[in-house]
Image (cartoon, rainbow, N blue to C red):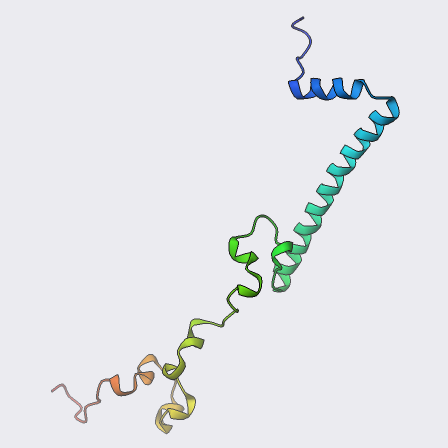
Length: 131
């Protein structure tokens, strides 16, 4: 072997030897199908990427099959997946602040965290000074 010729890989040598025994029309058909498969896979990948970007931009939920890249195991739970819930404040139940329970005096001013303490709020002292 001469040093001026680049050596072909084993895979390309096998590919060329297999195609070399076939007629020309079969060789061209096989190569065309390989190129077509590469182009179709590229087009599907680009289509999914565009669909994912549009869904993210519009704030729509993204279907697991349309997600760009690899999803997690939770994406494939189907009907067994937990239902989407609101924020943490939605789970407070009886401890959530109620607008109708507030005294009339506190409704006129802006509410703070101490307005929601109820029985746990510190008692206000009647005298103006420290005791």
